Length: 142
Image 1 (cartoon, rainbow, N blue to C red):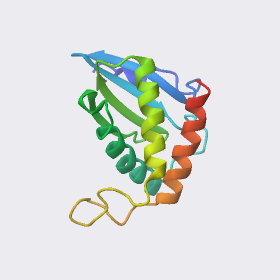
Image 2: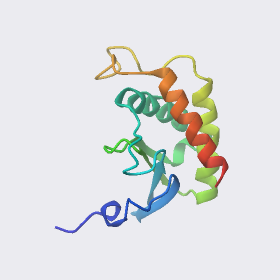
Image 3: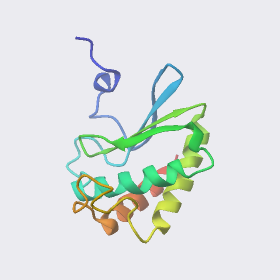
């Protein structure tokens, strides 16, 4: 089988930040790298789940909502994938800064009731906000 594009990158040298990935069928896959790959510091499962709820909600409620296709976690727990259409790097960077700020302002986890979430007990709002705030610091340096 062919290797998927993300497996062809040398993760030992991949920095944190925002990386444009494959563009296929007009959809761009963005690599939102919160943590250094293979660095030993990973996003906890509870935080990963909560960040997913927070940013999926704020991204899909942004002015760019029509251009957001998907937001979800990486299995390695070092970041997230964002799929968009019709957005440049600078537009995605601005969208992420705006959406992270909105997520940090939330006092409750969206979609956190039993009937809304398949694992509603596995969340940690404070850890998620800490991870998002650290990512904002990374984005500010780009």
